[in-house]
Image (cartoon, rainbow, N blue to C red):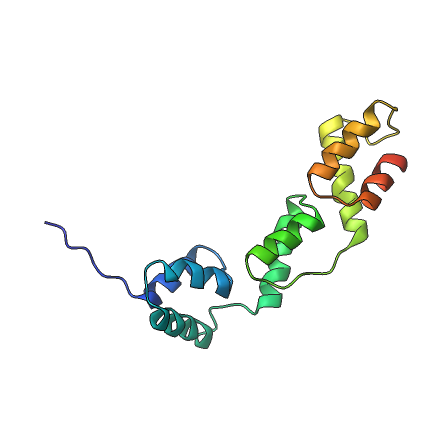
Length: 144
């Protein structure tokens, strides 16, 4: 007969942080499903005292960098950070344009100039992915 070992909130925090970095908001949400508020607070304070939790702005920059490498738009990144309880990061216009150009090149097999029929398709493709109008216009009209 197997006995189920009761896991403490502190051990659960360590388990979560071992897999990837979490924001404090994420940890609170996950831990509150299984533990009482006092246990959750104690576990998070213990993780903070052990320097296991990254500072919010540092974690936000790290997560934003990971998402940028995946060619996610600034709007997508900001929404993702907000959902995780992290502060916003600064927008880098040139990187944003470069990400959009690479996505268009991958999808449409060309960087421009685009025909009258292709422009709406490119616009919809980038808009759906969260790129702003200025970035979309520059990619469409400043083809390489």
